[in-house]
Structure formats: C-alpha cells, structure tokens
Image 1: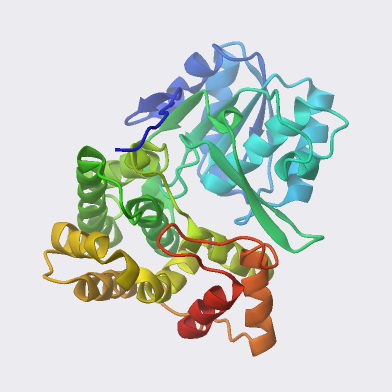
Image 2: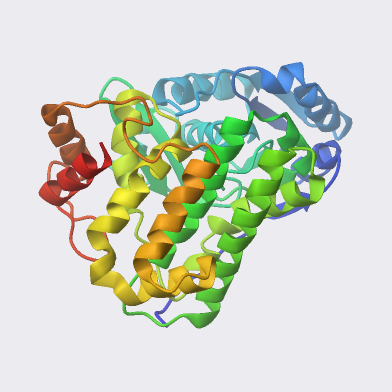
Length: 384
C-alpha cells in the first residue's frame, strides 16, 4: 500500500427534507451567503425559496446568483466574484449539481483574492493561499463536487477546460436530500451514473500497488451504482435506490477510493478537451471514451482489469469486463462513441483534441502506460 493523506472535512446533512436544515449548518460558517444556482429548475421546484427561507431563519442573509452552465464557465464565475464582493459575502453556497458547486468554488477563490485574475489562480500562476468557505445543497448525484477537492471551469475565450485540486475546494458542508433526484431528467441521471463510475474507475486501474480494502470499497461502490442506477432510471421516485446513488456520488470523489493506490484521470483529461470544444455533457463524454481507452491500455494492466471483470461483473476475463461496462453504458442511454455524442471530428480536429488533452504533447497521460499525443489520437480515432 502506498503512503497517502486522507482529508475529508465536509459536514454532511443527509435525508428527507434535509434542505430545511441549510440555515442551521450554514450559520456556523458565515452570515452573508451568495447562493449560486443553474438555469432555473431550483426556482421552479421551490427549492431555492426553501433554502433562502432556511438561511434567513438562521440569520444568514442571502443573495441568489443564477446562470451556472452545465460546463461551468470562467466568465460566469468572474461575474459571481463581482456579485460576492459587492454583497460582502463571507460564504458561497452552490445549489444544484456539480456545475453550480464548481462555480461556487471558483467564486469563493476569486472573492477571497480580489484583483487577482481567476484564471491565474486556476492555472496556478498565482498560488491559492486563501478562499471563502463553500457549502453545497445537492440536487443530483454525479460530480461528487460536494465532497471533493477538485473543481473545473471552462475558459471560453481560450477554448480550454481545466481543473484545480486544492483543500480550499473542500465544501464545509453538504446538504443532501435524495428525493430531489426524482426531479432530474433521466438523461442527466444516466450521465451522473457514468460520472460516478468513472470517478471510481479512474482511481481503480492503477498497477503495481496492493490496497485490498480500498479495492473492496471501490468494487462494492461500482456494484451498488450498477444495481441502483438501473433502479432509479426505472423509477426515479425510488428513494432508497436514489439514496444509494447520492451517497456513492460523494464517496466516489472524496478520495476514499484512492487511499493507498492514488489516481489517474486520463479519460477525464481527454473528456475535458472534448467538452471544452463541443460543450458535451461531462458524464456522457466519459462514457463515449472509456471503452476506447480501456482497449488501448488493458493488456498493460491485465491483472487489474481481470480483477475488475471478476469482482464487478462476475466475468472470467478482462475483455469481458470491458465489454460489459460498455454494454451497461448503452443500456442506460449513454453514448459509447463520438458519433453517439453527435460529434464527427475531422482528422485535424482529432489531432487538436489530442494536443489539448496532453498540453501540446508535453504531458504523458495514464498510470498504466505513458500516453502522449500520438497514443491519445489513436484512442480518439478508435472512439469515432
């Protein structure tokens, strides 16, 4: 088992009508909250009003700030920084899925460092040494941002999507009412299921490291998501199944499933290059690429893929485990190719995507074997 550091400071409030306790927990961390949300579904459902009422009852003033995009943008986060500073916010709360929460994290970093370009913080040109506290009210299981140390923004001007990992991204609290998942469109639920699996598998396929307990947690999480993912897509009102998916979303990305093993995130890097260029749904983008990535690398990591096939799918060999995973993505309505995403890139497009994913061929992806631009280009071609 490799050395590791595990840090998960997020206070979780989980259960039916948990959003009514938002003010109670938020008051521990601030008195003036900028409340970040997306395209208006939380307004129509009445959730935003319930959250605001809970905050105000606890003595926390709040200012709603809507418009977070499915692939959250730098420009919107920068606008939120200006709103937070004008309001005197000392707390940022994301209400929604990963996009709202990642936007909230970006705003928190910018508002704590006025005058510093947010993209300079994001690209580590300026060290991040302080931020405002962030909280989350989760409406859908997917990104795991409510307990992760990561956040992603897209710089529209540059056409670049980038993530930042820092303890300052850790939410101080996360409020989770699984019943809210029933209001999410089934395609987004399916994309969330794919994202949860990918967060787990990006940490699982790491060779040459023994971490038995971590493996068992990851394998159990994957089996749970497969079983209950089918259940919620059949009946989104199945509260018990939705609860399992909500909790799996958090566990998949709070670093528990990398303890003693570490992580890779090669498929994420390739997926970011696609979604930055084409605006594709994050989880769907990962599903479209995973099978082609697995075909490229599995022979160099055969024992891991063999164990995955046996423990997760009950299959006798690695290739069958890959096939079952791709079939599951198809079953839940996820694309398993670029054409399935509605993308038909030219050879030049694919070359540029490969360069974007590898920092103009300065980075080698994958812990299994080095993947430079040429190898990543081959994966994109296979995924067409």
